[in-house]
Image (cartoon, rainbow, N blue to C red; front, side, top):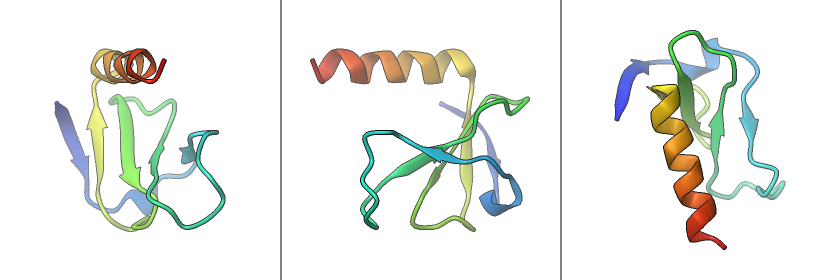
Length: 71
């Protein structure tokens, strides 16, 4: 569950997309590593929109569940 919301995600730098994302304008999320409050996540199509900040353990669990479901 999100712990915090950043109202304008463009104020932060260093966003990255998954290496599995294409270079087209498809639906992607971006994450930011190294944020002191957790893992910010934003919609790549709306860089000035909000970002949800997830606790690191919650984000790690989510990523592991995705890996298991895609095997």
